[in-house]
Amino acid sequence: MRAVVDKDTCIGCGLCASTEPDVFKMDDDGKAVSFADTTEENKDSVQTCIDGCPVNAISAE
Image (tube, rainbow, N blue to C red; front, side, top):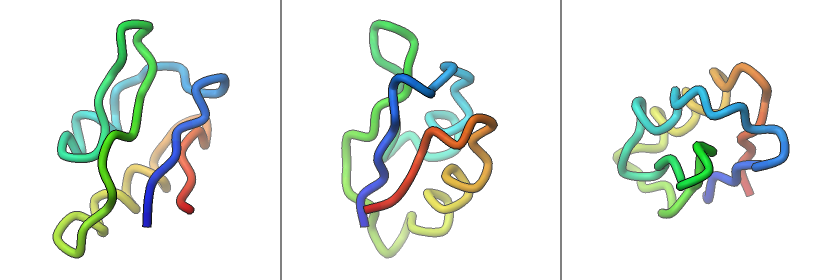
């Protein structure tokens, strides 16, 4: 699974990057970016990020 961030929707709250820094980071524009695939070890925290995004900007493919 790979998490995908819709940068047009993202408000840059940083919840995902602080929850799962091995998958998400904030870019120079202050928006979240998914830069790594989800692993077996972090799949639960990535799902927490997807479920917890306040504007539903994160999805999985």
